[in-house]
Image (cartoon, rainbow, N blue to C red; front, side, top):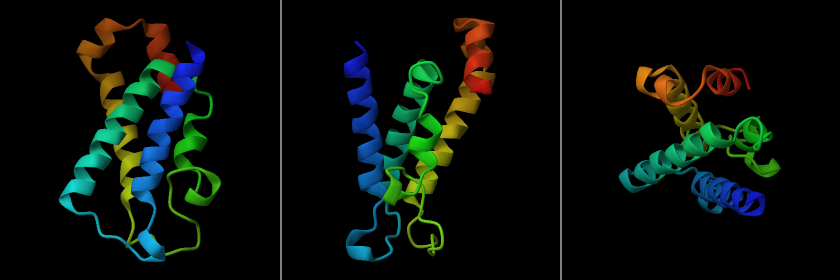
Length: 122
């Protein structure tokens, strides 16, 4: 149901935010375990977006690309993002996966042209 979908979206965005947050205000380099988690979270976000965006998840773009302080995953404007790029990498990987899926010939055969256009156009 819609409540479960919303809770799942919120939980995955929260997991991405927690992974992207600097620890004690310090910059955090991405190690192998963080990189793997970031890729898995990006894949989950992309899969959800393909199923839910834009009809059921109208806040997808703002949920990802708002700064951490506003509930998003993106880095804070005016700060040095070079030390903590986890949130940026999650967002960009998610968009990469969505684009690849929407332009893949196997994916195109699984969904209607109208649904694919909804996803691509938002």
